[in-house]
Each structure stands twice: as structure tokens, then as C-alpha cells.
Image (cartoon, rainbow, N blue to C red; front, side, top):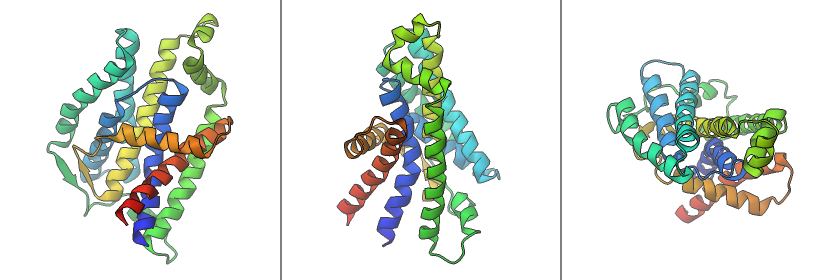
Length: 258
């Protein structure tokens, strides 16, 4: 039973990363490899802040900010220096390896004896098994996140973001700076990836320099799986498909392990 609940929890935690990949891959039509580095950056930042005595939720905010900065750099290289988007992401990802080592000070930071968000949620547990209670709490958080993210993409700013990926010439003709929109979108995407990294580090009890390897593949797989399940054009369903795809992907790994 723990295998399946653990898979559900990991799927929920990785869902933030999957939505971030969805924003670049589907909304902005931008192949962002930065994800492999910004995921580790978020985990490293959260781990260092928690070991330093920070509140775990403030540490997650720090993880989001560091991830967003990484995305901002990729967007700046892509738009400002006119470098191919794929190459821009690779350059930042490679650079982040050294930066992440500098942030951590070593290749691995254990968090087993440090309070994280699971321990905070456990303080409100009415008596359920710890993993089940955590799954319930994360599900509520993801529902709120889904509604907020979907609603944002239907606002003027969100529609501008979607138009930048769908028809940049049109919004440029309407006086919108496409480069700035791309930079903001990539920054938000990698901020979510960094947040996911911080969450996973707290849940697993460690941050490791190699934990982000292959993250973009996981995100893309989850997005594609979700889209194959939900075929609606509604933005609410599209965001939901990314979240569900993350959970299904984790269950597929659990089945293989079982």
C-alpha cells in the first residue's frame, strides 16, 4: 500500500514541475532544457535554507525564486542574444551544475532530521496514516493550484502569454513586446520547477546534485500522457491533464517496481 500512496504523493509533488514544462512546451512553444538544472536549484536552495533554520514554506518560496532566476537567464539569452532556445536552455543548465554545487557546498544535503512541510502537515493529522494524510493535504493544495493557474491563463496576462507561443507575429503587431512575454513565461515555468524540486527534497529527505537529471523528460512524458487522456481544448482541462499525467507517470513507475 505504501508503494502506491508514495507514488501518488510523488506524482502530486512533481505536478508543479509538469505544469511548468506545460507552460514552456505547450503554451510558449519553447523547448526548455533549463528544467534539469532549475529542479536541482530549487531542491538545493530549499535544503540549505531549512538546514539554516528557515521555515520550510519560506524555503519553498526561495526555491521558486531561484528557479525563476534560472528561467529568466534562459529567456534573456534566448531573446537578448538571439541564441537558439534549445541551446540557451542547455547553456544555463550546464552553468547551473556549478552554481548548484556552490549553493549546497557539497554534493548531498540530508534533511532527515530537519522539519519540512510533511512534518508541518502531520501536526494537523486527525489520526490517519502519515502518507495518506499527506496525500489528502497535497490533493487539496493541487486543486487550489490548478484553479489559480487555469484562471491566470484566462486573464489578459495569461492570454498574452498563450498568444506569444501561438501567434507571436499577431501580438507583436498589437504592440506587445514578445521578448518580455517569453522571458516572464520561462521564468514562471522554471519557478514552478524549482518549487517542485524544493518539495521533492523535503519529502524525500535529501537534496542531491544529480536529482534533476532527466527531469525535462519526465515532464514532457507526463504532459503527453495527460493530453492523451484528456483531449478537451479547455484551458482548465489542459492544466488538469498535466497534473493527472504526472500522477499517472508515477503510477507507471510504481507498477514497474511492483
